[in-house]
Image (cartoon, rainbow, N blue to C red; front, side, top):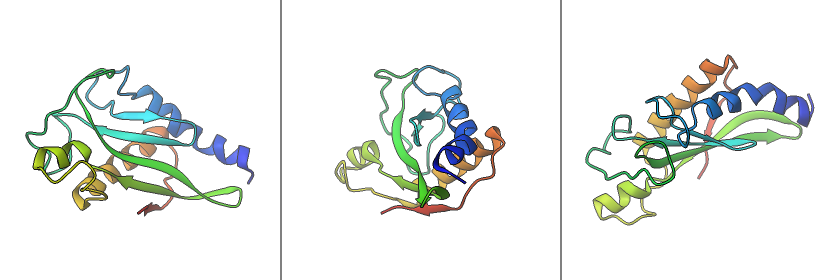
Length: 136
């Protein structure tokens, strides 16, 4: 494997994330924002982790009201992608609860919800999912 072949191996995942881009796709399953070697996961009033009930979400530049939940990036070992790094930050939930914008990092409910979305995305892309590692 090489750096280029690894990017090709996971290219379908980023393509699927781009098809389900929250900025341009108003369908309920469109909750992703893809980059070159990573993607973000957003929640909506109708699809969110446990505990997000009543959190105010705004549309801003996106296709629907949403709030950031998590990031996923490739975990490299040399020139090979061996896992996925997952981390979450519940900024809007922290504000809503009065805990502070940066108080809810890697909340278990958010990680569990995000992991299910990652599995679904890889399944849609037809790519075997590498192990998921929680990034602190």
